[in-house]
Image (cartoon, rainbow, N blue to C red; front, side):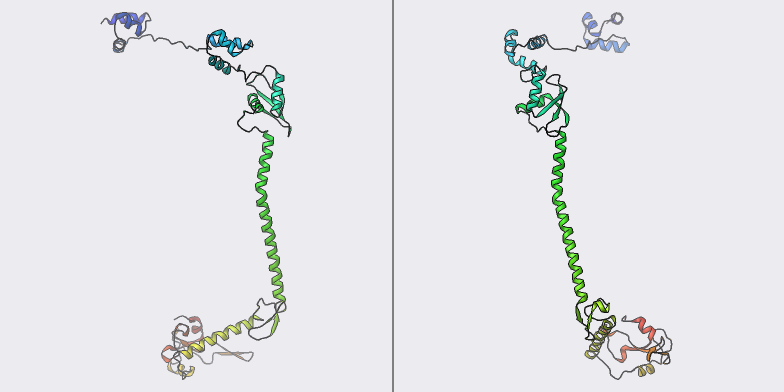
Length: 333
């Protein structure tokens, strides 16, 4: 293979295909030799072929603009009628898209339910129309208005201003039940509050009988908020009485030693509190308004296991305790 000839042809500006045809070799073989020897080859330039309308289509457009019908054009050019229809449709020259004058466009826009304002150029242009209901001006495609005028437009065409009003009206219709329910709830709440106030007033003015002392009283005069007791003092006395009655019942129903006294328990335990270990004092007493008030060191009987938890009033469950420790222990074991 003569590499020099390939280099010479490449220098003259020949492409790989031309060299392969001239030397009678394959294109791939020439490409391999060029790559191995580093030969610079000129590439074939591809021109952009931007094709316009075909000659037949140009003739169809010219004849159609002269006012000749599609059937006459097909017969004159000797082509198919569908070819003529397709070309006319692409360039806006079909029968249904043809609008010769602006007066016809205004008439068609009027049939669609709007008034023409401006902007008409051809059947593919955008025009400005005015709504007859609200007077608002907006833009629409002329072909859509024509389809609405003849009844072939699939979607619903509505003025944007009327549409906003309709949307707001629908929203208001949806809000009305909620507002009505809110008003009814507020009215019911006010009625309940009024009834509650009236019931409280009737309750405070009514005459009741105290459960403890048996006297008649009125809550408005006593100032104590209770229908059962006339005062807090009567309520405390009643609860203390019930508490003592329960305590006595528990003592009578279980083991109960009647010989137990505070003096005997004091002598048995040597006068010492079993909780804190301090000696109890009989003299730790004070008088106030004729009543005896025991001090912290005054002796008292303490149930090791409280009666409320199943304890008994017997010597083995009793111990001496000062008043302070007995009160602090309470019902704990």
